Structure formats: C-alpha cells, structure tokens
Image 1: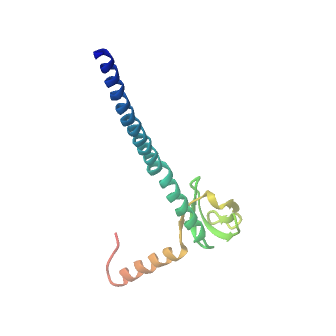
Image 2 (image 1 turned 90 degrees about the vertical axis):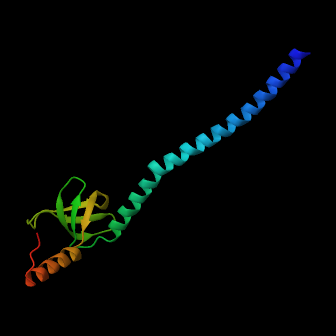
Image 3 (image 1 turned 60 degrees about the horizontal axis):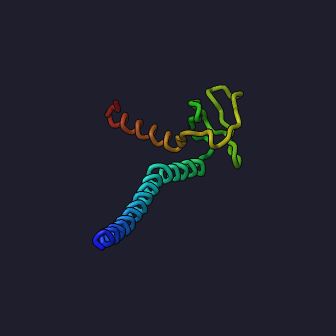
Length: 128
C-alpha cells in the first residue's frame, strides 16, 4: 500500500514537472524567435528601406559610388537602370542596374558645401 502511494505521488510530481517544462520550452522557443527577428530580420528590412529611399531620391547630376568601388556621375535614369559617367572622359558612359549603387551624394549637397566654404573664406575664417 505504501509502495502504491509512493508511485502515485511520484506520478503526480512527474505530471507537475512536465507541465512546467513544456511552459519553459515554449518561453525558450519564443525567446529565440524574438532574438532571431531582432538580430537578422529587422536590420535587413531597415537596410532595404534605406536602399529604396536612396534609389527614389536619385536624380541626374548626383555623384555615386558603385558596389565595386567606382565613382561616377548619374547621366540618365530609367526604371531599373542608370546611365553613369565615370571620370572626365565623356565617352565612358555605362548603363548599370540601380541596385549596384552603394552610396549617393546629391549634387545639391555638394553645391551647398561649396557655398558654405566660400562664405567662410570671405569672412576670413579658414576651414581645416
């Protein structure tokens, strides 16, 4: 009779432990799903949205750097392609895919920087 009570109480304890371990496993799995989301998926989506924003603001005259490290100036833009002029040679115009552009420096930003430098030199201040 005592052995039967010990077995029954042991089984009852095992059932309670089993319920706790399943809850722990669910929390453990949810934790790792959240970790994967915040480490891999979210930054990837953020980078894709920044790339899309950069491509939508692209216009002729902008200076760009390609993913292979070449610097050039945008001459023309189509839906998926961009015609880029590399160097001072007017004959070196290459059509390329928009996704091959790594960085964009707007023509307006370069012009504004030059104006700011001219104003500082007129005032007698030198920029180092």
